[in-house]
Amino acid sequence: MPEDRIESELEALGRRSAVWRPQSEALPHLPGLPLQLQAMARWAGGEHFVYVMNVLTRRVVAYVTLNRLSDVGRPAGHHFRAPHTKVSESHRRRGIASGIYRWWLDGGQCLMTGARQSPAARGLWLAMSRHYPMTYVWLENKRLYPLGDTPSAAVMDRLNVRAVLLGRGCALETWLATWDR
Image 1 (cartoon, rainbow, N blue to C red):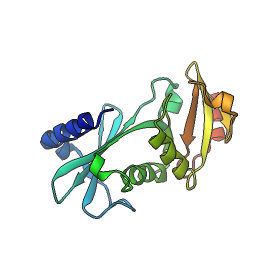
Image 2 (spheres, rainbow, N blue to C red):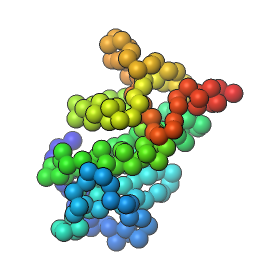
Image 3 (cartoon, one colour):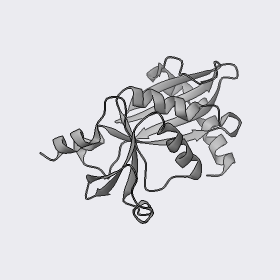
Image 4 (cartoon, rainbow, N blue to C red):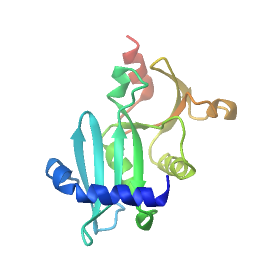
């Protein structure tokens, strides 16, 4: 996405903050985030939104939408979210995305990639996998099939393959067995 479009989206979110801010709750300071950044979460229509504001400049500098996954079945959809992150160019590489992802995963929820990841997103997921279990699944007909931690390169290139970061206390095999009943 072009940088000017991301900046425009963040500015528009800032202008609309009077609408979403009253519906949001401030998150505790996320470890690794600079002190001047405040994260706020909002839930609407089954989606989760996290906004990051610079309290000194009163600018929205990032947001993460934790999307429901329409291509997985209902039981799995409650446990997995696909994060879509946009960060102002001036605030990248400051731990914003990883701080929000940690908050989500530490809460016992899981993250799943979409069909494609940018190189930056892939790097973030690999870095997160040093602290949270990462596994892969095959997605077909709204069902998930485990592929393990290191599928072959030929399998990894398929659109149906998704990476999953497992939150605290989550076990993919346990959930899959429960959903198959």
